[in-house]
Length: 97
Image 1 (cartoon, rainbow, N blue to C red):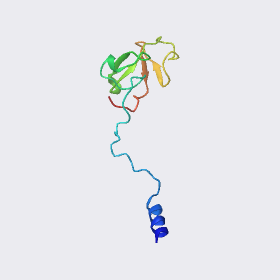
Image 2: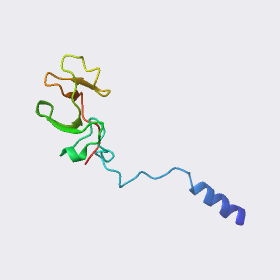
Image 3: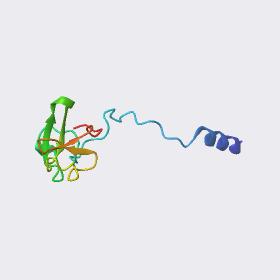
Image 4: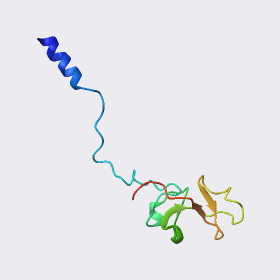
């Protein structure tokens, strides 16, 4: 009888973990790296010390300056240098403040 109960308990435990019901649908918390969302410069780290709004794209992200016309080689990966000399991402990182 004990063996039957043991087998029954083992069968009930599939080993899968339940989905995290507390997970935020906006993604993880932003850490201030380049192209993370921001509200002020204080939300950004040293690697991207500027919080800049790209109104046409509807995003406000941590970014840095670059050499305009340089092709964006001095921008973090995923960005290009715009005419104002600011690294512009193709999209903001999936995170929330």
